[in-house]
Amino acid sequence: MKLPLWTGISGFITVGLPLLQGVHASNTLSRRAMAVHESRTGIPTHYAREGPPHPETLVDFRIALHSIDRSGLERALYDVSVPGSPLYGKHLSTEEVKSYTSASPHSLAAVIEWLAEYGITDVQLESTVHDYLTFSAPVHTANNLFDTDFHSFVHIPSGKRAIRTLQYSIPRDLASHINVIHPTTSFDLAKPLSISVSYGKRSSESSILNSSCADTITPQCLQDLYDIPATPATQLPNRIAVPGMIEYWAQYADLEAFLERLRPDMPSNTTFSVEAIDGGTNPQGPEYAGYEANLDIQYTVGMATGVNTTFISIGPNNTDGAAIGFLDIVEYLYNMTDPPQVMSMSYGYEEWWLTPSQAQQICDVYMALGARGVSLIFGSGDGGVSGAERNDTCTEFLPAFPGGCPYITSVGGTYSINPELSTNFSSGGFSGYFARPSYQEQAVAPFLENLGDTYSGLFNASGRGFPDIAAQSHNVEIITGGETVYINGTSCSGPIFASMVALVNDRLIAAGKPVLGFLNPL
Ligand SMILES: *[C@@H]1O[C@H](CO)[C@@H](O)[C@H](O)[C@H]1NC(C)=O
Ligand SMILES: *[C@@H]1O[C@H](CO)[C@@H](O)[C@H](O)[C@H]1NC(C)=O
Ligand SMILES: *[C@@H]1O[C@H](CO)[C@@H](O)[C@H](O)[C@H]1NC(C)=O
Ligand SMILES: *[C@@H]1O[C@H](CO)[C@@H](O)[C@H](O)[C@H]1NC(C)=O
Ligand SMILES: *[C@@H]1O[C@H](CO)[C@@H](O)[C@H](O)[C@H]1NC(C)=O
Ligand SMILES: *[C@@H]1O[C@H](CO)[C@@H](O)[C@H](O)[C@H]1NC(C)=O
Ligand SMILES: *[C@@H]1O[C@H](CO)[C@@H](O)[C@H](O)[C@H]1NC(C)=O
Ligand SMILES: *[C@@H]1O[C@H](CO)[C@@H](O)[C@H](O)[C@H]1NC(C)=O
Ligand SMILES: *[C@@H]1O[C@H](CO)[C@@H](O)[C@H](O)[C@H]1NC(C)=O
Image (tube, rainbow, N blue to C red; front, side):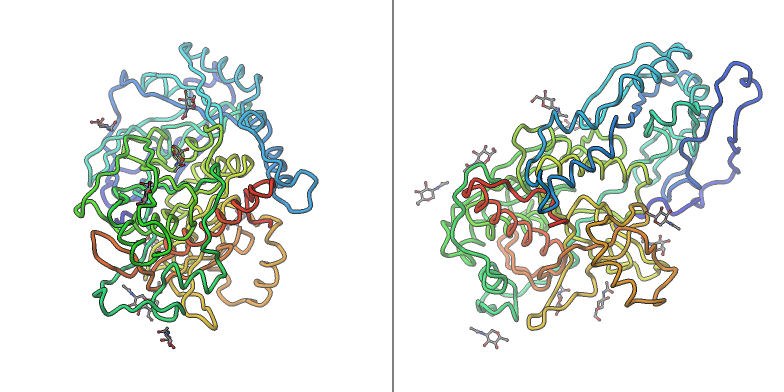
């Protein structure tokens, strides 16, 4: 699963890149003043440039338009999420969110007019959280339109080809209307990391249930340690969504064995429902059992007692440009009239695997879901300060994604009790893309002051700090493929904490109060 992309110019490049600065002389008279919109310094690792595609090759483009009022949505998110605010808990409907995130009619008209100047008139409006204009154009037209030279690139491990460029421009006066254009400088992301660090087996006979959490972590010891009630939730509309991807599937038989062994007070036939996007499936049988999805399901069904849990299998046929399912899953939830109130996701990236605009686009959908009242909970990553996974050659601290996005709750890992300590693999640090939000000023400013010059230069001190909270993440007992195994990783602490949130939501709903939604200000 280690596919480091974006590591700069790869060894396969033999020819220097033509620099595409400013305007081609032949076009200066007819064209508008252009400005570079996005560029990247090199070809991602594992890709090689093959040369220009045939000029008549049709490319399907998608222009993401700026929201009419992005900062208005951010204010609305904080209004409904900051305790004490008069609007606290008054979460927004899809339509209300859309009134901030849709493009302005002026943006639509301006971009459509520009495209028409190049004979592109068959343009569709695609509307999810954000608005997109889609159209097909031959490479030679696209080269003129974006003042660039598209190339064919090949992803060496898979042989998959992609038409991309390293830099493109748009008319200067359209910069305030256009967010990003795909496909241009974003190459497909590598597979996300499943963020369980490691697992070990032990014969189940030798593991005696010990309610102290001192030896192994089980639902019952967590209930004692964190004062989590074992009484079943009662509110049917309360739901928790557990996405699964990269061929991790949740097993019914393993859940049943887990409940029988570790939650004997629950009906062992308590189960989960399954939904699928992007061609996802959920095949059953020991040969399909993997630790990540079983861990995620066993520590939601087995901790959030009685809460309706839905496993959402994200298949390989993603439709979100280069984000391989990460946008699809949250757009799927956003589109629901009554989305699940909690999502627990144990997958992530190194932040630098994403371009800043990709990271921003996904993070903005998290903002929209937060405004709708969904708590988005992610394990922080398992590489310590060196990234989402261990990187022994790290020369600077690498933040993880989406931990750096200010609108999600990132859960780090602890071990031991009395005192409970941070594990060295628990990812944390400071985003290189997202600035520090005001809700963490009071915690981060003193932290940085204490730190002084230690590690200065290795991280961006003005970035969003993460994780937000932490929970047990060593020797967490699960059953997978019929065997008892013990997991270390923030993939454990994420679902454990998400379950607590779902149980609090159950009590809030029962009391006729709004659910927690975006948690961090609280
Ligand atoms: C998990 O961490 C514990 C230390 O708390 C260690 O003893 C164990 O070997 C680790 N397990 C794996 C599989 O790395
Ligand atoms: C649980 O483990 C701790 C530490 O190993 C030990 O002190 C305690 O007696 C054990 N409790 C039970 C019920 O076995
Ligand atoms: C679980 O088992 C109980 C008793 O055996 C039964 O009444 C109940 O309907 C079962 N529930 C499901 C969801 O199958
Ligand atoms: C996913 O895409 C592949 C290749 O296009 C196709 O063969 C497969 O049927 C699709 N799967 C689903 C479940 O849609
Ligand atoms: C859980 O929620 C899903 C989706 O809303 C629904 O289809 C399912 O019937 C629910 N399960 C239970 C046991 O209520
Ligand atoms: C959103 O929901 C509508 C109606 O339920 C459906 O037609 C549409 O395909 C959905 N869009 C996405 C992106 O899921
Ligand atoms: C490890 O970190 C360095 C930066 O400190 C980076 O250049 C390198 O690609 C990373 N390796 C992996 C496998 O992510
Ligand atoms: C954490 O510490 C253990 C034991 O000292 C070491 O083997 C492991 O590599 C460390 N992990 C990270 C992510 O630094
Ligand atoms: C540090 O983070 C801030 C806020 O996200 C950003 O504006 C700035 O460009 C970053 N600086 C560096 C050197 O990356």
